[in-house]
Length: 260
Ligand code: F6R
Image (cartoon, rainbow, N blue to C red; front, side, top):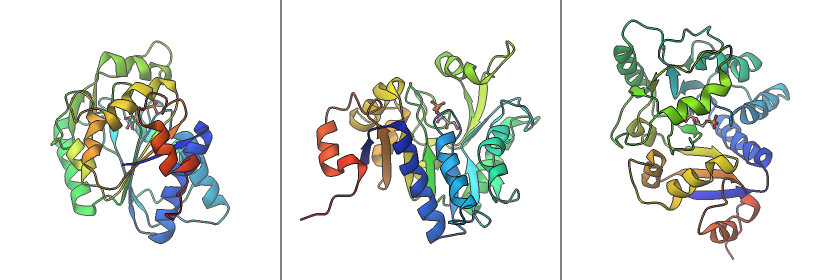
């Protein structure tokens, strides 16, 4: 794992965005795995800004989002379809025919999960997978005790995750109990992973992911098995890492240090 620690959340988000933009510049028809959640809008703003400045085009990029709530239609304001349109797709030139999310409002969500995994397999592998992390160590909606061998499927959301995501719902509406999520094995098949975590609420799960044992109780620890993962953190999210000084020595201020 490459661990990059930045002073602020804004710097961390900018670094994550640049890794994605660099990938698209190098390979305009690459396949990206995308995430939602409160950590991601600053990343997507940088990506939109790069497009507005003419530095990059996303027209040929294929995207697969990690997850969607079961029961929410794409036009529901709290659906992840809606989030992606609002935060990224509508502000850029991503092609609607190349951007994919699972549909949460189908009659048979299990069949939809299987269809979605097969679609990723047929168009993948994902070149770069962007991830956030839950305070309980989830990636995508792979909640604690998810199998490292899991594929896209329906997961029951924990009370902690539903509580954490209540802030995105209004008018007394509660987050759904179930989501379709890309599985951990599906994530591990990506060529490259970038995980962004900011804020003190993520400090425990970040330490468990990076320095804890490989364990289904912290699904993100599966990333220890992935050969090309970059973990991008701000000071708060990095605060419980035992080897924090070492990571900073290897990558001062999150930069590549020359080997001399
Ligand atoms: C959502 C996703 C989740 C979030 C995680 C952190 O697509 O993949 O794993 O990344 O729940 O969410 P925030 O950023 O809201 O703290």
